[in-house]
Image (cartoon, helix red, strand yellow):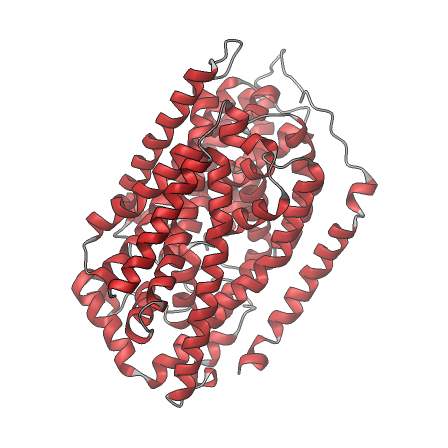
Length: 547
C-alpha cells in the first residue's frame, strides 16, 4: 500500500465518523434502536444483506471455493433454503412480531411465557452473537495484518473503535444507512476483484477449466453424518431452512431491521428482495473463488506468497496444512492490483467487517437495555435510557473485541466457525418463537427447560464447540443439522416438561395471529417458491457452465 491507498482509507473512516454525527439526534428507544420506524425497504434490504454477506463472505467464501480441503462450489448449496425461509417468515413470524410493537423481540416471548424465558433467550442471543462477531472482527484483523504488517493485537482495536463511535452516535439510522453504503462499496470491490482476477488469469494462460472438477459440483449426495460427509442436499435444505428462518426472523440483529420498517408491506418487500438477491451476490463470491483458483494454477508464486505469510503469522496452521486459505484474497489484492484500487478494495473489506460489527453492537445494546433495565411497569426516562443505550454500545463493542482474541486461533475456516456457533443456538431460539405464536399447551417451565437442554445437547455434537471445550463424543455431525435437531429437541422437551409441570397462569400471545390465504398466495410468495426450484436446477448445471 502507498499514500494513495491510505488517503482513500482515511477518507472512508472520516466519512463514517461524520455520518454518525449527522444522525446523532435520537430522543428515545424508537429513534435509537428502530430508526424512528421511518426507514424504507431499500436501505433496510441492503443493510440486512450487508450484515450477513460480510467480510466472512468477501474473504472466506472464495477461499473455501478455491483452496480449502473439501471445498468448492458446494458453498452455493447454502442458498437452497433462503427463498423458502423468507416465504415462511413473511407468513408466520413477521405478522405477530411486527404488530406487537416491541423493541427487543424477546419481550414478545415474555408476553407469552415469563420474564425468565425472555432473559434466558436474551442471554443466549448475547453470548452467541458476541462470539460470532468476534470471529468477524478477527477476519478483518488478519487481512489488515497481512496488508499492513501490523499484528492483529493492534488491528482488532483499530477497526472496532471507528465502528463503535459512529454506532454510539447515530443509533439505528447510522447503522442502516452505513450498512447500505458499505454493501454498495463491498459489491463494487467484489466486481473489481473479479474482473482484475479474470484478466490476470487469461493473461497468464489460465482458465477456470483448470480447477479441480470436484470443486465445481454443488449438489452432494450425503446426509452430513460421519467424517467427510458434508454439504449434502438434505442437510443443506432442511438444516438451512431452520437456520435462515431463525436468523432472519428470530435473531435480534436481523429482526431489529424488520421492526424498523414503516409497515408490514415494507417488511415483506425487503424480505422478498433478500430472498431474490442473495444468490446472485453469493454466486459472484464463489465465481471469484474459481477465478483466483484458476490464477493460482498458472501462478505458483501466488500460492507461495500465501504460504510464506501463513508461515510468518500462523506457524501452527503452516505446520498442519502449509497455507491459511483465508489469506488468498488479501494477498491477491496486495500482490496483483494497482495502488488506488488496493485502497478501494481495502475499503470494501473494511465496509464488510464494520457493517457486521455495527449491527451486532446496536442489537446487543437494544436487548441489554430493554431486557434488563427497561422491562416491567417502571420504565426508564428518556435521558437515562439514552445514557444506558450508549454505554451498552461501548460495553458490547469491547466484548466483541475480546471475543475476537478468544476465537482468533481456531484452525477451522472462519466462515465455518461463524455458522457453527450460530447453529448451536438457532434451532432452540426458533422453536421458542414458533411455540409462542402457535402453541397454547406449552408453558414457561417447559419452554425454559427446552431452551437450556436443547442448547446443551447441541453443544455436545458441535465440532467447532468441541474444539473450544476439548470434548470428543465420537460422532461427527455436519453442523448445519444442529439447526434442525435443536428445534426438534426444544419442541419435544418443552411439551414433555409442560405436561409434567402444569402452570395455572399460562398465558397466550396478546397479539391476534392468523394465517390468511391471501397472505400466502401473494405475488412475492409464489415467485420465491419458484425461485427455489430455479436455484436447485441451476446448481445441477454448474459443472457444465464452468467446466
